[in-house]
Amino acid sequence: MNARWILLALWPGYAAAQGFAGLGTDAEGFALPQPDPLFDFPADHGPHWDYRIEWWYLTAVMEGPDGTPYGLQWTLFRSALAPEEGVGWDAPQVWFGHAAVTGEDFHHVTERFARGGIGQAGVTADPFEAWIDDWRLAGPSFDDLTLSASGPDFAYEVSLEARGPLILHGEAGYSVKSDAGQASYYYAQPDYALTGTLTLPDGEVEVTGTGWLDREWSSQPLEADQTGWDWFALDLDDGAKLMLYRLRSADGSAWTAATHVAPDGTVTTVPDGAATGRATGTATVAGREVPVEWRLQWPDMGIDVTTRPLNPQAWMDVAIPYWEGPVIVDGSHTGRGYLEMTGYE
Image 1: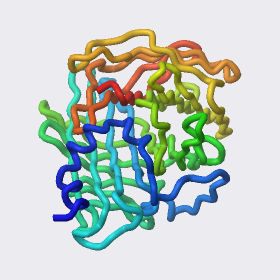
Image 2: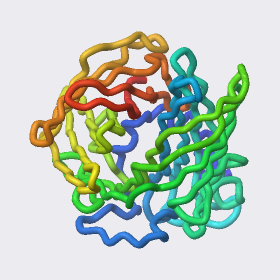
Image 3: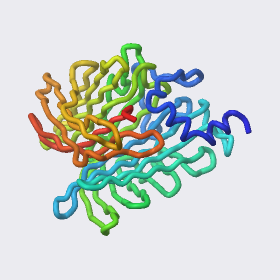
């Protein structure tokens, strides 16, 4: 068994040892994002084999017929050991998926791993389909999708219909992550109308809500001393959308970036420092203190909001653990959304 096969066999433990800080390791041999990208849709909805890291990331905030709130997450990750697609068992692609559903008093989560090249997992661009085993996000186009996934304690099947155009984060989709210039290609569909069914231990629940799908790929998206991030995707009641992330460094500093989509579709992006996030409250989660309450400020946009979790215990107990769950927004604007925090393992 050669070194590549050994690494594939041991991959979950290898990834857990590196954690999210491993995204700052050297990416020799892989392509690196460059400024002024020219996206090609629908082709760019598919894989980019010459880049090391890629994901298709859906979060959704929902409610049942009685107004009970829920959150849903589904993510497919691709991690490459070499910059090529490969064929059969020799393919250097590792795929893994996360699925979760969250309520005020529960958080169900599961994960799956797959090898590339043998049909167990993959993505096709047109028509769009992303799958790992029997989990699928698929439809005739990126604007019209159906998602299904299941775990030991839950299942969901929902339909997603885009209500607006794709938006580009950063500088026309080139998203800078540090002073040293690390970057990714990053775009999103932030406005899906969602309908469907959750299957929970107490039975089925019909839900409606909104979904946000992020697409990002890179080869070394973090600087070596960046240890994790705090990422917010918010659906505001005035019809606007807000994305803000903080990339934390070991010295306590943070690199921030934000995107605002106005109700009329106008997109405003800002680089480091123009918008900020500050933790205002913590909770003991899985034996560690995690900053689950936040204040986000973007003075030029008149944004000064706080977020609090629907369920503070939304811990993703997977190979590389992190916190992810729905949040409620108050302050200058009200709304709801999702928060993901990595590097607190």
